[in-house]
Figure 1 (cartoon, rainbow, N blue to C red):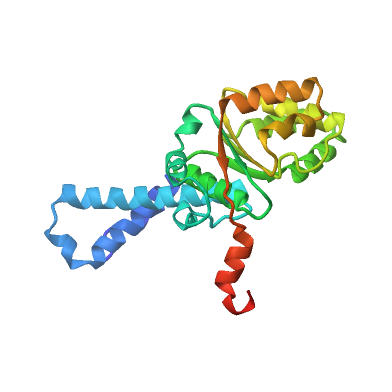
Figure 2: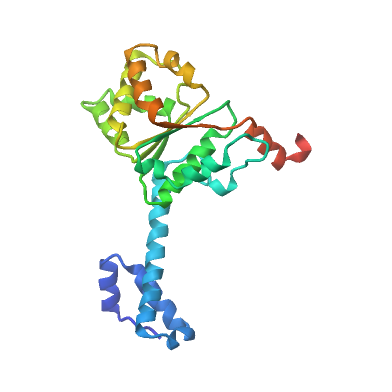
Length: 253
């Protein structure tokens, strides 16, 4: 039996509440709901709508974040014989570092799982409704070069990437930077400083950063804004690419 007439359905859709129609339809098909009071049935319907909208919002945030590994989840992180601090990852999963505008630096050798860890934290942020974006530094610098061809293009690009509450910068310091690139990254770091959080994924230790950033005043300024308010996390001694390849293809190891 249909409980809602077409006019009521139209109004609910106009209010972007099509999930409420689904909830009522489900109740009309289940005899168990007949024993519930009006208040309880309304509560069940509201819970259904809330969960559907929450799930839709989270999936939208994850999609727009453009994660390199969109299905990365903290529950799948491998810790055994790796040297990755489990308690630190549990603490980071709360995303309280974002409330404090702190940053995270995942550092370790190539293949140690830095990108996965960053994407897993980013996904956790999305689940808390936090607008997040992932990008590799080489790709960001390509966007910078393209933006430089348009009037106010770089300014608009900086505004866009400054607006994310959590920004993940992968392959940080992988390549040498030109003066223009150093200036661009400094402006981005400066705009995000003390008002948002950034996750850096890098192969380089702290004492190597200054030289990789060019060794000049921009390097001094960026180091000052990043390293003193950051949580440093070593991604471990295990080559996760090799480990996972052996797990998935044990006869090829």
